[in-house]
Figure 1: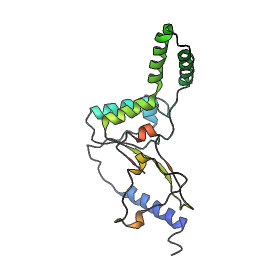
Figure 2 (figure 1 turned 90 degrees about the vertical axis):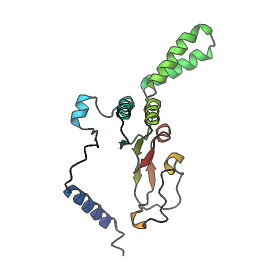
Figure 3 (figure 1 turned 60 degrees about the vertical axis):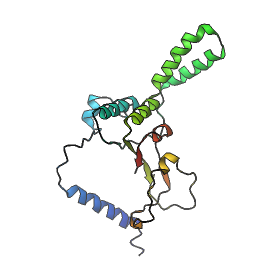
Length: 193
């Protein structure tokens, strides 16, 4: 019993599972497309990490093509900020504090720049429009000690499995989770590990 709960046995089990999956030879179905982030795609598009605006364009194209489900295993757990956003925000604060009607055109231009640089909002809008994007998130799979520090966000909790009728053999305890940022997590169809 002690051996079956050891980390060594768990690692051997996972290694054996990976080996078995790699030995299976199946022809992929022609209705599944995998968009890989490999050396060739990086050379053709941009250096990694790809900006959210590029990911937004991919989701829009896949949705327009009638893709039934779009899965992304890129962990987007931090906002993408542009250095120019800081300057635009500071300039807007300064100009709006002056309450001078002659500055309205400049304020509107800066607000448009603010919108254009908010790639998280644009990606979330594309995901919401597609309505079928599934995102990944990471867990640190270790037996927890004590109670959780914080509950998971609602957009993660709604994806929890009801394990009352499930075999407990497939339950993996975790001590932490890295969910996507709120604006993306709230618009995704589902989140999984």
